[in-house]
Length: 438
Image 1: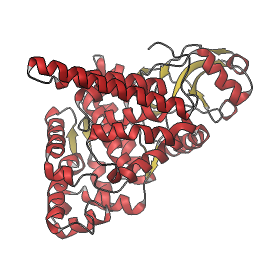
Image 2 (image 1 turned 180 degrees about the vertical axis):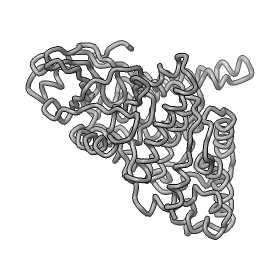
Image 3 (image 1 turned 45 degrees about the vertical axis):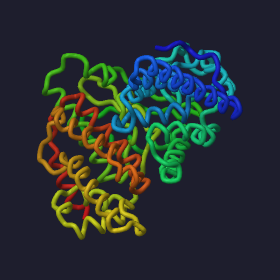
Image 4 (image 1 turned 45 degrees about the horizontal axis):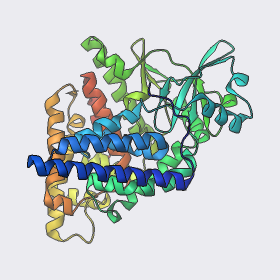
């Protein structure tokens, strides 16, 4: 666990000044890099990326909240950022610097008028886990082991202003124009505001667990309303090993396949039956206990509009991708093609997106799929690199409905976990669901 933080900048002025200071540090890094380049005759881009990534991450870690959450979001798609940034920002998923105990006590007093020791029989002063929006402490009440999630101070109130301040960094890193990403930034803002609402998360958690509890090989915590508040969420403690640690151990292929199947079926049920999904599938949200999958965070739930669902999953069928007329209709519905697009631009976008969708939907069109096949993921990364370097696609970037943001995030997260598991999955259930999406 990283060194504890004794304070977090809460006021808009202090948080803005932190962004300005960070920008100055990045500027100095560029000056130093170009100074070295003048001597050596070559710019060391990798060294520059590492220094900038480290400075930006350190600042975002101190700010916490939506600023750090944006780093986490960006890290999940390794095609968006240079490797130095994605590697560093990935730390936001489960190893961010925790808050000190005095700040935790302050949050309890503001929410309950009591210290943790007055509510629980025992309460660990050190966090067991710290992420972007909050940290988890272990506690006990009446013999029940509990996980108590404590939100960082100022998180909810600073989301809108933080996103405005972080936007220039994100646009520069992703090499996109501000106006083009406004709908997507709005989508992210809305979901972050929901994630900062622990009362909403409690309601979502109870609802989601009730709807999914019948699925095999899944574990969910029990939630305690009486020990939850706007900035504190209390649930039962799930014993087990974080999935990231579990995957590093010597596991049988049978167990890896079983776990991968559980994860796949869980997500297909959400998307196709519930028309909603747990849209934060990173390793920090899953625990393995007795070869069962424990799901511990329902702060980010994406509801899927019916019209988007049907168009999106109809495109996932490869036979549909062979129908140019139908593709044009669906691309227009999903805002991949715009009414104002000249025919040439529409053709460029169509050609590239058909290739991309055909690749990403490959698991949907097979009875079984080996997610341990690194060649498949190499193709994905190569396609992403091709798109990012294509001057025509750069000119025509930021395409598609705002709902793509969390769909893409979910599938990239899901695919990456399954790849790390080296799981071979029966995907035939997905083919059955796709027959209904038309």
